[in-house]
Length: 301
Image (cartoon, rainbow, N blue to C red; front, side, top):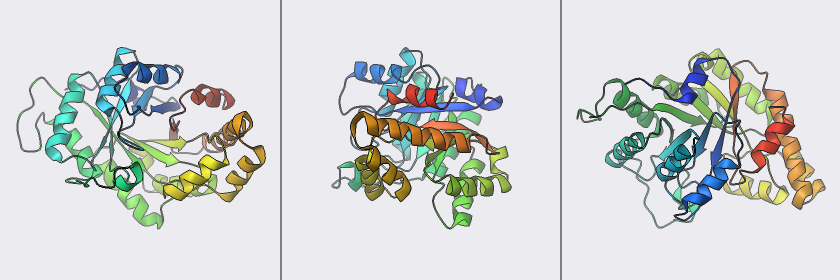
């Protein structure tokens, strides 16, 4: 079935891509999702909808449907942490039925990091296998067990990468497997060290990966030093240098801290946007969607 997502069309072109995210609330309020999405402005080509990112929340596919009704192209996120292959394929079919055309395939944070220590991990298949499943469902029109999909199925699969993980060789090996499985775009974890990201991107470029997929660097405007320290201590994929935290400490909290966070993020974007092999940025709002237009304005985007 023909894939006609706006994101797919932009990836096929040469534009510098901008995507962003919405973190749905722990509630059933579609209007809250709509307000959050609209506060992002009109620059992002597509908007990710987190899948129980920091805790139990409104489902990604339901919130994505709200965005679709608002004329915003969503990227539904699907974590293999919580579902076996039966539920994963069912959710993908449901998302496609609702007009959702893009999916980000994730493993997901461990449940202890999202306030649900008593819940069980599933991980029936991993994120690489999920990307491959989305590809097969679209290309062959069948489920993993061979059942024919009626009504057609077309969804653009993407995946994530952590440019801070070392050894670099193993990092690039796993990234290559995601791209070989058909990940059309890669959104990275938040970049705070330009040097580390540049090293990772160069390795991905040398491996021919950037010629096969659209790499979007994750960027996160921090609010203050307290937020930075909490993220660094809680999540291993948030590698935030001491120099960044020191700058935020000197700025203080409130509006001054927010302004400094945007300045730091803008400087990072300015340094990485011309790197060969980078196709764009993915703005990780962390639930602060209204800050995205401010950041893009500061970046000249």
